[in-house]
Length: 111
Image (cartoon, rainbow, N blue to C red; front, side, top):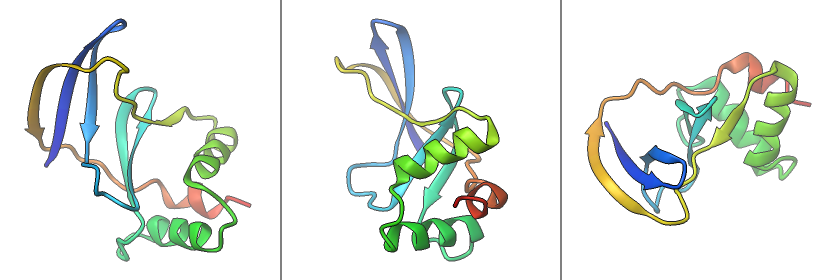
């Protein structure tokens, strides 16, 4: 279950998946503005999460540089969700989202 907060913004209503402020090593990755992936570098059951941890531990990459490289190689538009600058909450609810790790082949092809 994920907490989805809907904000009023200058661009209209924005949904943001909130995993909390103490979620070190975890990110929600959006594809074309839709939450698709949950990165958790401490999840040893996912090959892509283990590979991401290796890249980050060796300080070869940052999570931002990894996402930029995946976007360039795979011709996708991955991004991190952003709360609006002015936060006017319309609603907050727990929703069961099926967010998977980033596909293995995308992460294993990063050079």
